[in-house]
Length: 248
Image 1: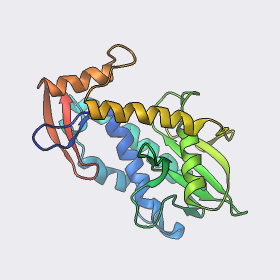
Image 2: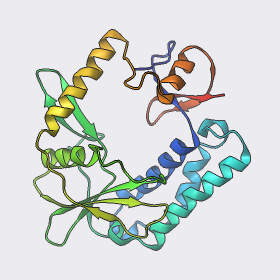
Image 3: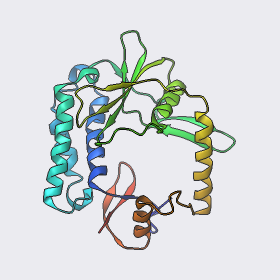
């Protein structure tokens, strides 16, 4: 919805929590493409430190050195947890996406021009050939039961490969040494829910207006501050093609 007026690039409001999550996920994404026998040749903590350098200071949403030190320490602890307890990360894995595509995708509604896309964090190939989808969590709170994230992953997996998904897990990296398995959710009606949401987003983009469902939540207000010039531009993320802004 929100784009930088001069460049036309999407806007991202940076924060310590966002930076922490991106750095940890990017660290694990590096080894996702490596053969399992060489995934830990380079310590994950070293990879994390290199990635963190690109998001240090205000670019990462930090307003003091002490704040950055705290979040950097949390991130290091998370990747070290995986390094010390690799479990499924050391097993045979695969990637859910079509050849040549950046992320997995599928048509939700060709009539509406709606495509569902997503990046599944980790897909372990189990001994029987079925798949185990793992979603990394870097926050302190548990995932909302109403979230459609796992259903989206299941839809993408079913559309982009022939092997069944028999296990789903969240890995809360701040506190758990192993992933926490959850029940495989029912997909009945999920496509219809996503199409409805997609239509609302499409209509909002076409009209360049979307009414906040909460009457003005903190997420909307931060981006409105960017548009009003009440924030500071602190960089550009070439990987995600987003202009980075810090709320002062």
